[in-house]
Image (tube, rainbow, N blue to C red; front, side):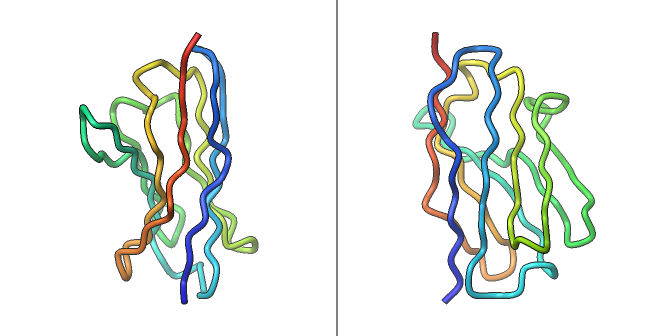
Length: 113
């Protein structure tokens, strides 16, 4: 059974940084596009960033220049490097594998002074 396990969330002050990780267990990793989404009660779920199997990336306009998605195929892990965090970045963040429409359990990020 394939599992996606996120980690790295927490509480951070505005302007701070966090790095989220998503480890994929139970399947080959390098062939699949992966992404990060976030969800809040107010906005629902939105795509934050995506990375193709070949490493091409896209980022939502709201995070471009502040967040960066990356992958380490040797570790079966994708990352979301988040800088200059703002209160509006507060959400539960999920990683997603497009093939099979697989989701992790989510990790909460709170940006607050």
